[in-house]
Image (cartoon, helix red, strand yellow):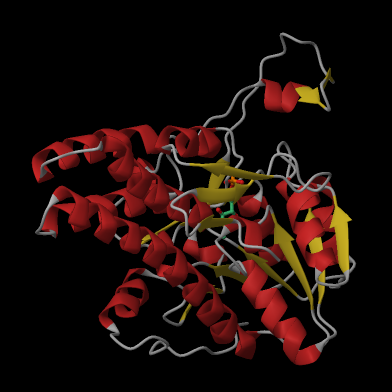
Amino acid sequence: MFRTIEWLDDGRVQFVDQTRLPLEIKFIVTTSHERIADAIRAMEIRGAPAIGAAAGMGMALAAVESNAQTKDELLRHLERAARTLNTRPTAVNLTWATDRMLKAARGLDGTASEIMSALIDEAKEIAEEDVRMCKRIGENALPLIRSGWTIQTICNAGSLATVHLGTVGAVVRMAYEKYSNIKVYAAETRPRQQGARLTVFEFMQDGIDTTLITDGMIGTVFREKRVDCCVVGADRILRTGHVTNKIGTYTMAIVAKHHRIPFYVAAPTSTIDMATRPEDVVIEERHPDEVRIINGQYVTVPTAKVYNPGFDITPPSLISAIITDRGVVRRPNEERMKQLFDSSAPGRVKASSCD
Ligand code: MRU
């Protein structure tokens, strides 16, 4: 797979327009942080780690665009850019990245132009870190996945949702590399179809046996024992172990528990928010037409009342383990989530198989 987003040598940012996939692979190149903000809003760039990396690069572009002569002037531009880039409320990676860039800028000494070039390095580092974290997620997941398993997923937490490789993408790809007989079931993920459009596309590109199902088929697929475990991504994981992810994840976790199917969450530590309480998570409510319209045609009464939350929250009681770049938190709770951050060495929280 190509990189979802990258900083080019000539100072422009290139990203793939995910709204066109899988029918067209179109790359967009920009020097404007406002264009990056629009891309995040329109979901041309989507997936928690990918929008984090995009926001980092957006901040670096804003620094260059500002033409600021002093550090104070630059900081004012960056604070404004951070507000512009924070276009989606649920995935914590977005504010995590803009806060990290702001903190870096505030802590840097030197001329405005020296600070700008340091911010470009910081944005590139956010992207490189993301690639490394995904790789470690895949490595940490290996003891949990057995030869011949079929993995159920939802939405897209693959390469496209990150800079490269993916979170669920890393788990599937590294298990596939090891056993070569790993299969995937992808839930289509109404209404934006990230499962059908993106997950199926990228796993098929890698030659991985992938079966597409509609979201309503999950119960039947689990009852018929067609899958051995679920692995899903996350947009925000709380200190309590609650996981916010694409709408439908919670339902899948309930059905998995009923059928005693291990339910794993794969996410980088940049997705963990140790400050917010479950009741304070803002769930993005998206436009009603996403539900009313399919392929440009109304499939209901055009004025039909619609409820369209983009995400849901799965409680830790339904989660077998959270697989991160630092290690695996089995049966997550507040104490175990804290241990993850207390452990200085990556992988200190050891992986072990779950019920
Ligand atoms: O609305 P989206 O497509 O940005 O939602 C993406 C998801 O819910 C993913 O599962 C999540 O961001 C994890 S990506 C590694």
